[in-house]
Length: 619
Image (tube, rainbow, N blue to C red; front, side, top):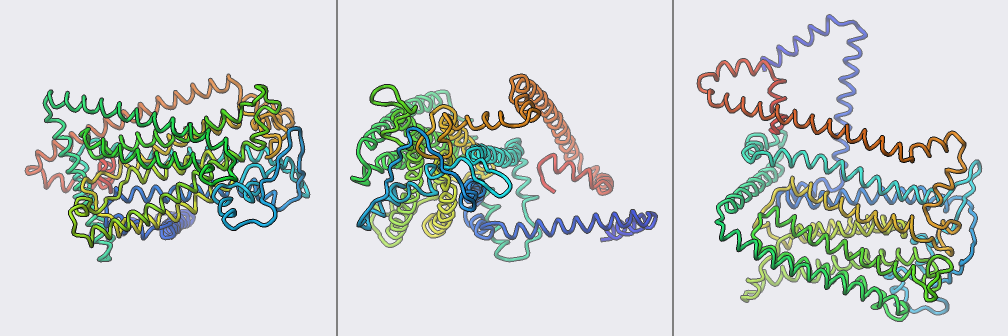
């Protein structure tokens, strides 16, 4: 307290020497800083599910917390995507008069049911996206508009549709990379030295601003869970280090056999999806909902069975808990995301092939008069069916299992046991759904809104089943690396989603019977045609930045900047190592120099703060 008073008196003396203008500037700067802190605090209080996530962190640790934080991020991302599509594509059509275009190959028969319609047929249409839903704002085919006339300007809807698609993909990339960078820094600091991780949690992990008893208990249990995770990781590392050569050969042989089995399972799943997709397109969807949903059913069955097989196999491969999660997740990611690719390849093979061998309209306009809406329906069905399966498993499997384990004393129930919250499968489920959303938004503009509602409901379903049906994991894992890895997997999903969207925009001929691009050969053609109509100066500038010379120059500059950042990071790492060595030397000579160091370091708080930040110990 005496030091604080001396610092305050010193600041007051310095303020007296300043002019009135400088004093006003300092006071204004302090006021703005306080307002900024208050604003950030208010925004943090308005954060979605803030209280629920704190409760989950205290009860189940930061590993489970990472899943729910990841889910919250996707809810916000999809809501922003919906706002983009609604504001730039749907709202102009709703609020202003527009011109419907016509062209060759423009026969697009309505699929709405006429006359007396049975109630279950409406349910069929609602689940499949056909019937009364096909020619609505939900799908691409409804937006057969080229120009929208406002009082003072004309709105180019095809250009807006294409640019919004590029914008939501680019926004997703920037947001994911930004979150991944912060997670990677924390992972890098924690993976650098295990002793540092223990010190950080024991000596700098407590929040001294906590005054509530329940919050203190939650924080205590969270720190305890993280320490258990670190100790478990160190035990596994020690076990791996103590393996003999014979044990290593045996484990590698087992892993080889199991990975060959995994490849065989994946090949069987992909072939089943291909056969199911071809079979479902040959049968009219009006006849039976089963045929319409056959690809979705096969994909969902494969996605449900293969993670169970992979989770069983991984137990015999003897990996660390964190690597088990990553490796299982990568296998399941490959299965789920590639299954979507197999579905799209099967569809596009039929869209681009005609019976006569030469497609007059550039695609099979007889079987698919609006192929974009057909692709949107497949993505819509995958999204709806995935949500139905998640809800059904929660209600009809997880809750009954909890009741059986609690109230049944038979040996089978005890062997089955209370379930754990499987983080890889749950993360994979939302990455799979988000990949479907990225692919399908171009063909089904309202899909981000459906995905937002879906994830919002899933949050509460998973929270209820976690609190009531699940027990804490027997093999805890660290959340910092998991957060980064979850976002890395999501980034893979985004990269794979960009491939079919790019092919559909740039390579496959647009439908001539529906959508905003009826007067263009491909969707991408609207961009160069719009650029050609610009003034000469703007056209020259855009052509220059899209040229190969500019691309090569930009690539070279980016590489130089990257090398500079790498060199800077290396320099910082060397400084950190030097500071660590100095701290080790100081700790060895602490008994003899403690009074001197205490008096000298207390007079340099900024040095202490810098060292703690560089070493990752926190303020």
